[in-house]
Amino acid sequence: LISKLPFTGTSIFAVMSALAKEHNAINLSQGFPDFPVSEELIKLVNSYMKKGLNQYAPMPGILPLREGISEMFETRYGVKYHPETEVTITAGATQGLFSIISAFIRPGDEVVVLEPAYDSYAPAVMLQGGMVKYARLQAPDYSINWDTFPALISGRTRMIIINSPHNPTGTIIKAKDLKKLDTLLKNRDILVLSDEVYEHLIFDGHTHESICRYPGLASRSLLVGSFGKTFHATGWKCGFVLAPPQLTAEFRKVHQFVVFAVNTPVQHAIAEYLRNPEHYKHLGRFYQEKRDLFLNLIKGSRFKAVPASGTYFQLLNYSKISDEKETAFAERLTREFKIASVPVSPFYHNQEDNKVLRFCFAKTTETLEKAAEILCRI
Ligand code: PMP
Ligand code: GLN
Image (cartoon, rainbow, N blue to C red; front, top):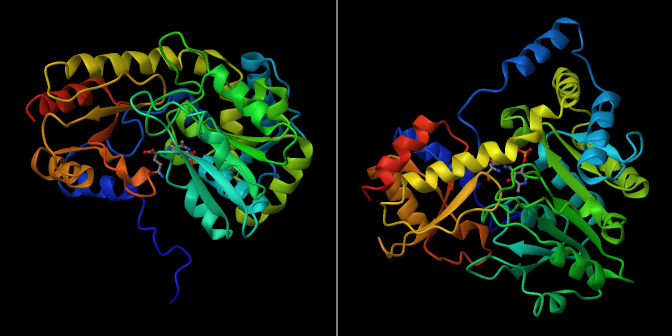
């Protein structure tokens, strides 16, 4: 068998979550909340199932949900995406990302990806015969290096993938970054894929710089979102893609043959729940409190942290504790100390090792206290 992805193994999230389970460890590895989904939202799903909404949804998603997303973007960013022609519901952001890349990348095309990079981007590009060019974010703040970035663009560049708030580093793209990108892409036929699944999870008074607020970029962009993050329901796999009509039409050509349509009762429930902005308006504050609690609890430990500006992940540097490789150290902490995290090296194509681990703080106070008690002993 000749593998189409010879250098790709099982996703680090699956590996670390399985290891956590095997060793009965506190799981701060894979990103998911350990607290329940709102009772009201669960009741809504139930009620729509009972009403008989259990058959295929329309291919692009049910209209009330597309309208709700359109309204949320208009309220938050002052930008209107037309529900009929510019909004598509996907089976989580993952399927949106994969279908976008499948729809637009041809063999030989180059795709620029910020590194460290979320793990699904590069394999999706490679499956289409595309080549990935890595724009390494610069430590310690993981900012984009605008001196070296332009050299990554060539006549073969078809797409740039950005992600803010950024997984795994927790940093955010600033207005100046998007302005630079806008200028750089002028008069070039290059698409932007903007992964904004953590759009609501942003801290310390920062506002989310959505690609949609930059007309020059928005006209060439596909924006990906996820209700998994927004409504604490990662297992429901419900997300969306926003793009101008022509790009949406091309995207849907692929989307229809990847899933055709997405879970019907979940779409109806989210459409109704989304109407009340109170259900997502306070997410930044909610997760900032968790980040602060976690950082305060581990103050006495030997781990070093630069507070995350967004997402529900906190990177911790352990160079004062050990010189083991990230993967070995993360595995040992899971086995011996019963705490699971995610090494950051798998987010680099060359497995760059900076002695940092990623911890998910989307957890109850009790879980964070137990985790911190362990981290302070290491
Ligand atoms: N993009 C990023 C940056 C993510 O962190 C995740 C998942 N946590 C996804 C995409 C996938 O989202 P979903 O679970 O909705 O497929
Ligand atoms: N995005 C989540 C994370 O970063 C996990 C998603 C997955 O397991 N594929 O941990």
